[in-house]
Image 1 (cartoon, rainbow, N blue to C red):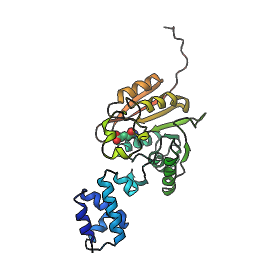
Image 2 (image 1 turned 120 degrees about the vertical axis):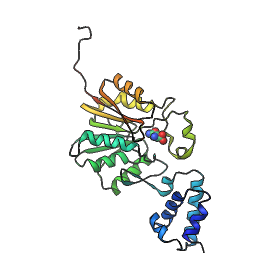
Image 3 (image 1 turned 30 degrees about the vertical axis):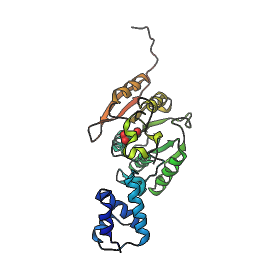
Image 4 (image 1 turned 60 degrees about the vertical axis):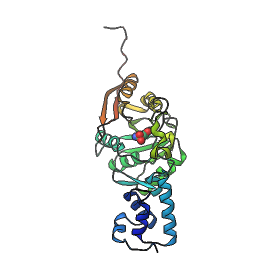
Length: 282
Ligand code: GLN
């Protein structure tokens, strides 16, 4: 007969203790704290087999979030799977900046590009109850997950399949947010750790990682109302390049913000088209 304590002890050879507790908790549908108080509870054959398979998969590199089927973001639980990027704490900065821009009782019409699990759009819908949220993704699988998350968290986010702006012809928004893929395709991180198991279309974006951002920045002006803003998450070394792209696309008030780790992580700008000026006048 194997007890909770014995199963956790055996898993320690392959996994950190906290991961083993999370996975066993998932198998038994109990919180990790329950496990601490039930050390000598015995496990049935099914639970042991399921736990052994979780331990083997995690030891083989599969992300804990995919094995559990969820990840916390902004204090809420979002269902995740291999079709979507696992929500990351640094993306909470993007959400906080969007909330600050709109204001708690703002009525903005907001678009989230490449929504994945829906964590950004759904959080904004919950934090900004008067705002209207549209979230798009090119992946039908991702949209299914986002839709399930929207339902379980009780939001009315409008979801649509769209490759960036391709399905949004003629639509304008007051705020556009995005955590697009921005890792350079040659970056060795893509071939190590949890990133190996995440969808590459959510991570990698051309030789310098800026392909998606170039496309978004170039097209966003057609989909922003005058005075509307764009907020984009990017890599630690892309702030200058993203600022230049925004300037070239006639954005103003360009500002970059650091995440909690001090990394320049989000750049925002306002689209305020100027009246035509005669180019030769002095
Ligand atoms: N910040 C993520 C990472 O480097 C990348 C997320 C993204 O490409 N949007 O793991």
